Length: 275
Image 1: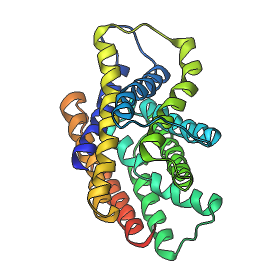
Image 2 (image 1 turned 90 degrees about the vertical axis):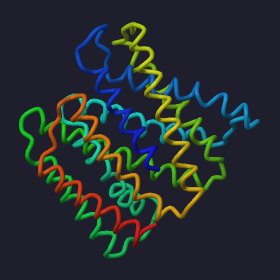
Image 3 (image 1 turned 135 degrees about the vertical axis):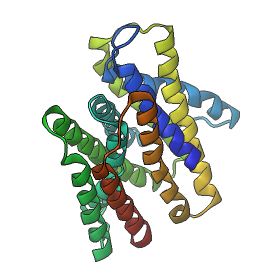
Image 4 (image 1 turned 120 degrees about the vertical axis):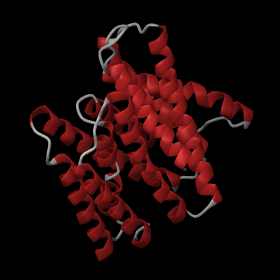
């Protein structure tokens, strides 16, 4: 799970590098999002072939909804890291379980006890601690990061919804990437630019590290109970802060550490008292 967390932080760093001015044409957020899904789909094909799995589903419309939420979350997250430090965006994104909990109560008719509502309050306090110091465009970028957490929470709720329908995890992963590519293709085309060689390699690397990271998460969940394994995912925040400092000169602030602590506390409360 820790290695997967490092890979997810690497994905954010690669995306941020592509979005900053540099050699080669300027690639937009939607094109990077499309590449992340289309190359993810291609990387999953040999895995399906080696496992002799033919991906089939009777729930295409549900996968479209899941992929739409996932693609929106990725695009909003990529947009936010263009303007504010990666560690801030990643930390805010870890509030997505709160939104998953609230959306599951509304749409899946789940129940929440007082501890889960306490977790939501603590998590939102953490988000406020991270976002409050920002001003001007940076404040807007923080709000975009919160929106990314919201739609990523909706995606997780949809995954819970789909997991009750009997599709295998690798099939769910494949259709999530396939429909994500189909949804983002028409959005990416109007502003499409032809990447140079090193940009193609970075676009492929973004998809590859995500697929490997997701596979490692599934493997970690198979080796131990989820409530033991899941907290290690919070190391993504530390890796993001380290990569931001080393490669983008992003200095962490005290408010960031305070917000991280509150969001981690929120997640631990949810892990202890929620499903």
